[in-house]
Image (cartoon, rainbow, N blue to C red; front, side, top):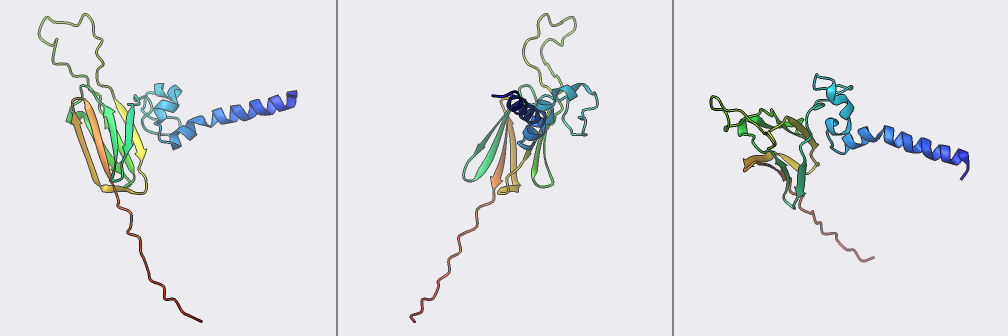
Length: 170
């Protein structure tokens, strides 16, 4: 390979890496996951004003069946009041947590933690653009045993229309 070809290949790779954050955001990854350098700006927004910067990106599993989409997120230690599930513009599912640290143990007078290793709830914000066949009216959310499950129903596909065509003999 010539020096010119190597340089062009390098330039192409750098351009792809430079645009990687925007590409990942288009695929549904939160800004905090793809722009970690913006996480320390302190106002919860990135350089382009996007929300969620500085918040932890909670891992999520998304399942699809013939009748629904299911989002599963581990939320250990969070209560119903700590979690908010909303729908923006009828197509953006938003799942966020206030991330307040609550511990029932070790709060009595004269008691202090010597070691604190268990993960505590954290703030997170996830946004998902729902597919065209997602039903904005059929969304349910349930938090059980530290796992949040959000179910978004699907709009049933239209019944195929059949039409009889008259056959003529010429």
